[in-house]
Image 1 (cartoon, rainbow, N blue to C red):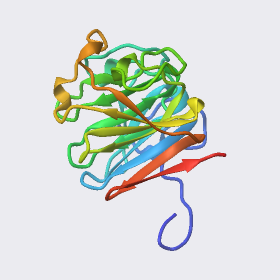
Image 2: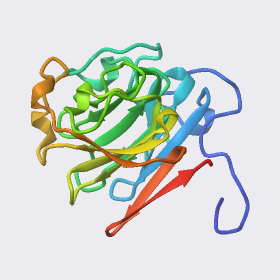
Image 3: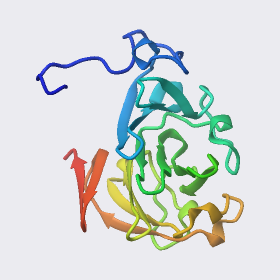
Image 4: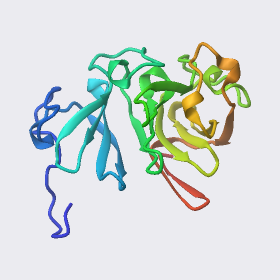
Length: 219
């Protein structure tokens, strides 16, 4: 919606599919896009192209690119370039404007992942891949999540807030100040713990200002 009060298509041509990288976003094909995060410093809009199993970005010139995923559902690629990784129906995204790091709710993989801006390498930082709820206060990648969706990173606390939607929880993953050293899922004992926050049914959106966090809810 622009300042004139009218609504305009910004990406996608209304046809289901997956195409358009490197060209104008309005001509691209999308499949069930969800979750948006705008980086004001780079003037880029990031979103989950959910049923294409990718994360895409629209730059300041209005061109679209895939930044994570290959277009097929799966779970692979940790420790490698994000465009070679596989995701499964991602439905949450947040870009930290100060670092450019991108946090993803990899929903059907039941994991939270991060793409480091400095290297474009992707890591899992939360979730074992098993749907459920095993408990809090354990290493984050040993924790069971159930369709994590909305994500938000609070740099002041080195914390990622996650809408653990089908567990009816908001949870916090505490991550190192220098996530480039984040170990892969092969070294779970080195990953910080996950902590319990709340119990209501929360869905996609979460934002934070100062010391307050706000979440959309479905009761």
